[in-house]
Length: 242
Image (cartoon, rainbow, N blue to C red):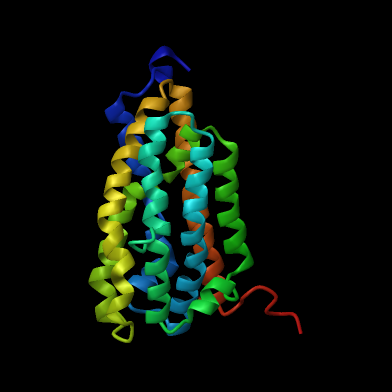
């Protein structure tokens, strides 16, 4: 590699490289394309909601793991808001409660969501891998994996625009989570991007970060691969075992 090829990207170039990863975002998975175009059956919508609930529950655990490795008080003061956003407080409920409301809006019970009775093993495996990554990596590396949030506002906006039209049987109370995350995700992106652009200084580090972001994209894509098999192909785990 010559000097030009090994020179660090500028902040602008590095951010562009990160944003180019959007093509691997799970919004482009066939399952999500069907879901956003009104072509999934009720069972598949319910399955997606139930499996994503485990992800919602894992987010504050992941963020707590990041904070446990961070000795920077100013960063912790800002990052803790992500935990509050999902767990809520005694005075105001957060994203987990909003997702429970989404579950009820699509015809699931809170008990079914909390019990994880619909959770697919592959989905759980992928999400647990993400949480373990956050526990084991330097906080800056684990924090930068959250930058799939770069692409999240678009996906929430599309759901709010398309779901009421395609799935009129879903109660309006179920859309609170998507409305909340429109603003929260944009705020989180600003902080996460700042951390990332500051931390990865050499070309080798920057290229490593692209791999970190790809890992998180792989987690989200793998979750949908599992749901595709279970709810579209109708081949859930052990379907051929009598």
